[in-house]
Length: 449
Image 1: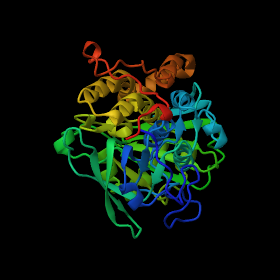
Image 2: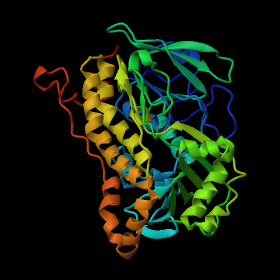
Image 3: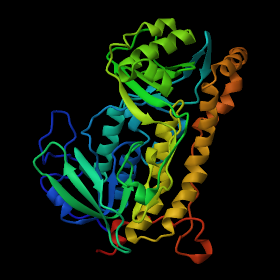
Image 4: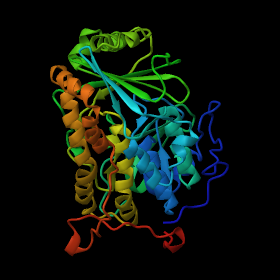
């Protein structure tokens, strides 16, 4: 499964333009027609942290990889823009440990937590703040430098389950170009299309379970962070209507991310009232200096309901990763950490699938995800429950104000690295219930197809 010669004029790593792009934009490395003219070892749908990281790792291992996304990069996302120690460890293990510093990421030392007029300053066990424009574009660039091809501005649509032994087909449409639609084929499709992804329909995945009390995400970025939001501190305000987090980014903009109760957001007027609701939460928590920020006039973006679980984490010749695998309201960077962790965890399954799909791969991946990423999300879910009850949170903060070290084990546990035990070979009947063996053969050792 060796990568073919690059399609001229685009070369992975150079991001040379093959279609019209705006200044500063990451351009496609090949045309849609070129992408459709071959069968890929792996097609990765979604170029966020999970998709971009796994695309680069697969390409580094010699697979022919195409990474696609409907957006053009750089682009912003609703996100807290924090990488905790677990996320930084995942980047280090992927060979990209120097990336945050190279992007100018700001180290985070403290969290200022506020609720019902009480405030406590807690130490953070490592972590940085970095904008999603910078992080995601850098991960895509790194993937291309490792040999992956990149096709932005492309909408992917599923075509149903493939026949046994056949590659999976995906219809790809360039959104704002003259190339139209073409059918692409890959031995495995890695679905990293986020919370509201629809590449695989309910017939293949089954209906997702959305928590009855799931909150809605919302976010904005202000052009200038006020002096009150000092570098190195993450601010968090909690109330009955949700919570709001604020952090200064590497370019001195202010990232604001919130999780709102659906009823509270509707009562505030929906998306147009997100800024006013965020200001109300800040004031109610006692952060009056931040409640005066121009939040009501800012441009807010929203997300679907946050806490959800898919019925399955894949289908024949397709594996889910990242937010598509299941999501819980994040806290101090767990969202990106889980995405990066899932990219590392899925790697041996994806490589095995690219050699030839085995129906044992999907249940093995389900078990691996549950054992690694899912187990960590249970801790985040428990913390999210506490944040939903400010009357319970407030007395806890009173204790923490006296002894902030009591919070250290919880915060350290949330940020502790996720270790993935090397799995056994799925096709070995004696160990079929474990997983698959990592397929880390060099490109020269792979038999051509």
